[in-house]
Image (cartoon, rainbow, N blue to C red):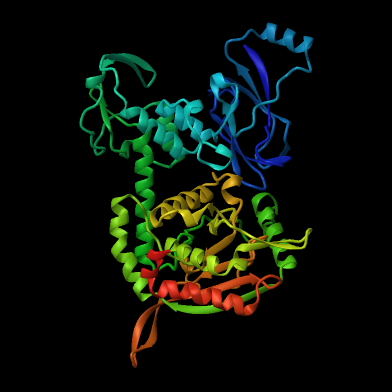
Length: 501
């Protein structure tokens, strides 16, 4: 066996160092290829660092909380299958030929000799589902392969005819031969289960998602025992998350446009402590400071009667749930914003200061501010104008959750042309949001509350949403900002008009 040094790889574009947040292994642990060794936080995201080979951990050379430059050795691993003396002799003979570790976000694409861009979690999912990454066409930024791409490929393979003959499976490390027709039975109930069979990778997935694997409904029976697949774990975790979100929505008043609804926070630092200002928090702060002191901010406030929107959403919500989509108010607002941006193109522009030009964007990439434990992140729904309401809802919900899980890629937060933030989830009404520079506008949504309004001469209770539009006064005049807001109000007051957009 050979003792290998593993250096901190390039974990992101332009990243020179990262904070080693958490070790997931300890000396003496056996590790497998692509197993997550540690989590590293950069000024862009929290990144999983996978092992490039199988072996046994010998020494951890960086401490949790330490800032580590890219290229520094962080761990040594005794690799399986090679002779120590031969490896030492090879290292002494050619001390300069040690290959740099592969970036955390790429993987070999097999026979093509190229690269498949995918995160460690996506590569792990591909292995669990038996999908060859080199055959999957990535739909993410720069051709990155997403979890959805892998699952779609797996579903496509399942639809193909399969051999009904005997096959070999491995259950908890024990090899067995079984007839394919006998491996699947009616799903086993999770209650009162004495034993659950699952692959090690599936158990790791359950641990990662905080799921009790014995509570996951089994999809198969093998050797008379309940067998849980990775898909079942993922579906169970999604169902739990949706149930928790539904409970949170039920106990609160209408949460504004609600994807950035505040969640219960863990106990933070105690009074009197000094908290390092670094990583994602510092990057967010630097961006806020640059925006505030570069673009002259002006905020326009207004209110809109959304009684009909509330009724429409309540009618469409069960329809969306049948398609496994969580429909909040945000997709409606995004549709209204996109229509208004088309009418007022300066709101969908940016200032090229070097060339002294205003660039009117011809794409509509809408950012949705999401509160995370690391600070405010802005996932972007790209080409939102070309997507339907439910597609926007699905993509937005997935991106927001990835941001909160710190699994979102830089490309998924880049390229926005306009941003929407929701302060209503915690009961706020009005705000003065800071522009997500170099964009020129950001819209804050307040809570939807019952307020008295005069309708046909009578005072009646109506559902009212507050709007706070901040814009760059170098490019957008006050009158334009007000008219832009009025257009959004028109569409939200009569949401049937959104069907025409």
